Picture 1: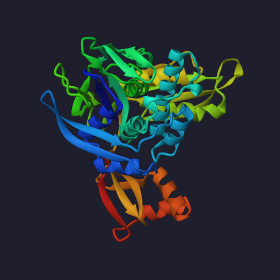
Picture 2: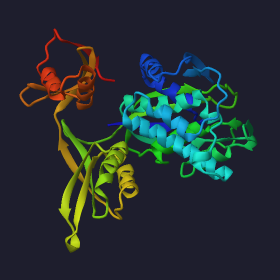
Picture 3: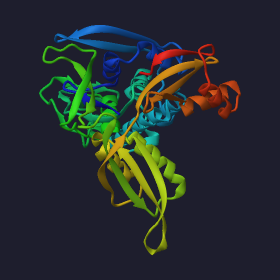
Length: 398
């Protein structure tokens, strides 16, 4: 599992987040293709290297056609819904915009559905959030933490008039997150940046047992003299004393007897989004003869708190339990093959004795089945018996 730590020592915005992801290793070609697939004409992406107080950073700008429409939440969610992204990423993006709408509604005394998105409803802001969320998922990040968020001080001019920093909606979005940087001049954290943090981290600060793997810096538009105006992202992995091929994990468990069956899949999806490595549900008999459901999630230490919080939020349970477990695991690699023009992700494991076993990703098999009008089971059989004449290898999956 990949862990990402936000380090917004000079604040955070949506464009700084996308830029930092590019600096962290996000493929520029992937970003351009993702934006192109949205079907919105006239969008250009400028990516450049810049300096911020001596730190070499990536800077990104989405250049969009001039638009004067004030969007409502439903208009923004329509753009999110038609994006060619994983459901997890679209869920994160929708959650972020829902948070923004709720914050604006609370500040202005209206409802989320009636809120007019002004600056945040502009295409560039929508692209900032949507591209960032899709990129997090594409790069394999599932667990997120944040260090103290710099907010700055002063006044800003926005659609509704002149407001103190942080703007009222931004302050609402930052509730529950650690904040600081009050001595920095100007607006350091924007509503889109705050919404990204709130959605992904919930204010969780990083544990002490992380190993940094790589860092990336995303530059803000301004270059003030009092600070390096950039966002740092730290890709990390948890420290785990383990035997080769054996993970040290936790099993989190809760029993419920009052969760309607149609809402179980949504709870399972939420647990995966919180960082669970695996989730199972087991029918059980509870006290007083009531039929119930046991939910079990396998998690790393860094995701344990987030998964337990999700159990309490997404199910009616009032208690949970957990204990450490060990998981012997086969060595595995992932790559991408091209079959009949379709990109198929594939996982290969090395068995005891050295033999290998490969399995195509089910979602990609189903997509290829729909695109080629071939039954899914035939696609999988063909892929499992594939040879070099019918497929090309695109290399390791990033």
